[in-house]
Image (cartoon, rainbow, N blue to C red; front, side, top):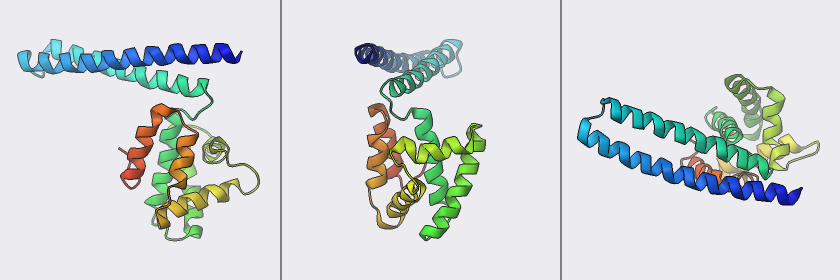
Length: 181
């Protein structure tokens, strides 16, 4: 079973590489077409739409790859970053305010993505390897240490539990002081 999973992962990863190459090539073709015919020409727009569809395929394949290797998917990474973003920009200036902001973030993210609040909480704890009675407190301490001490433990934990394809996005998030790109 594990060999099948690994084989499927490798095949999907190869497909992802080829789709990424096709997307880059299509992007180049779109720019050339725009130079020749202009931005609003049907040919340019059609190639642009095709590029968007390829980009969507890349995101779907990345999510499937993450699931195959039991890592946090791109969609879940976005949800997790939203939670952290809301906490950061809530004005919380101590651990107690961070706890209040976390509760608000759970509510906001669950509404935004139309998922259960418990699913978001699970993402912030169990899916990051934080378990037991103090898992939420552990997550909030990691967030507070990042916010107030510039500690990188939160970023490192998220990267550990996410697919390699998500690491650049995670780096960009933390390097932009928690602003969502």
